[in-house]
Image 1 (cartoon, rainbow, N blue to C red):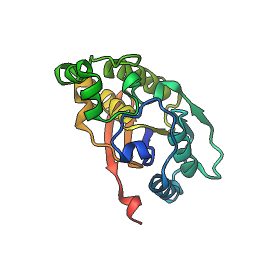
Image 2 (cartoon, rainbow, N blue to C red; image 1 turned 180 degrees about the vertical axis):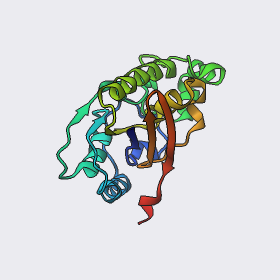
Image 3 (cartoon, rainbow, N blue to C red; image 1 turned 90 degrees about the vertical axis):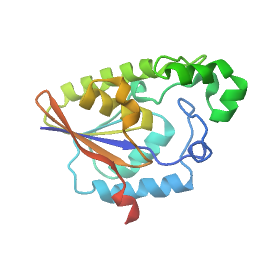
Image 4 (cartoon, rainbow, N blue to C red; image 1 turned 60 degrees about the vertical axis):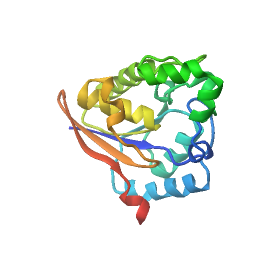
Length: 202
């Protein structure tokens, strides 16, 4: 059995202010650091074999607290980055509606295929994440893997492995520093933990 732990990074100021933040490389805010610190205890007794991150600061900073002094390898993969919002990076939904009305209308009509100017579509992100996760699982059979990334990436990974359909992307809630877990038995995947926040209350 392969165990895949999916952990969203801690809060950033962009998250707090409801600003689109995909490839913009920002750090955790104070609340995010406090959230991430709680992950040390949550993973203390889990014998992780390998870790993957998106390479962006907010994921790297969160990963630090999970790994601490443990000596397993850590790999950064661009394929695990959040959706590239292009010209919409740093904007709120209201600002997008005002400055990029065609984008706003496109999101309402087909949020899966709408491509952000100078960015990408949800479909494009989903495809790269699905390919990366499939490769990861094929390389680490019967191992314990931690993936530290972003809400969109984690939703795409779960939708891909559990439902096989991007249309279920928004059916999964993924809060900051939540722990999610998928067990893979041969070719069959089971979602055993979703949006676990219990460690944040300790």
